[in-house]
Length: 223
Image 1 (cartoon, rainbow, N blue to C red):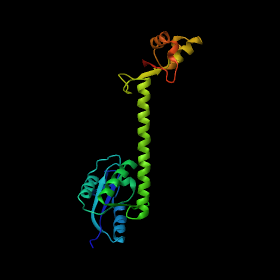
Image 2 (cartoon, one colour):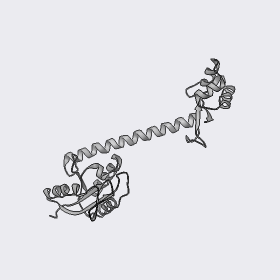
Image 3 (cartoon, one colour):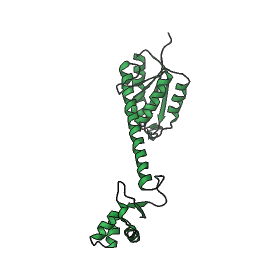
Image 4 (cartoon, rainbow, N blue to C red):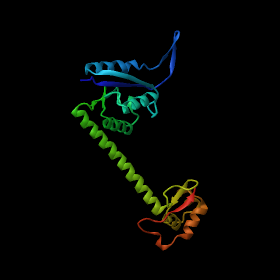
């Protein structure tokens, strides 16, 4: 039976070097992550295929080491990926889940040294399913909010839901009419609503009895 081939991925957050004597050394040593991963791979009886390393911020989705790892994964070079921690591998839960979903499709397991996630075990597979479900729920909630916002904007604002030209203040007619009926000056109304005097005058002049309803038609005034 062929030994399981494991790939180790390391990342340090900076590429800054410090002068020490006659040599320049990196401020963060990837060896702090590497040796425990080598030990874990040895304890599992796996064969180390390659160590991939990046010296870059986690905010960078495109990293040379990670790119090489993913390319080798797609050609079936190894069976399992071992990392020190989630945040060393992925910059977000979304990126982590997408990578794990691709690994699962390729038949590659994923092990995090510091977190209790090991997809080579039944418990690890169950945990991954939960993480993936939570990530999908988050994406669904965001999609629903975007759709609801666009629909409201189409009904009550611009047809496309997108702002046109300079930023605009959306003012309801009843705000202007109520303030004016209380004797508030045009200048004070404009200051309170963050619009120009001419805008609030125009709103007041165009106000009519059918301006009430489930969604009052707003008047857009340039700030």
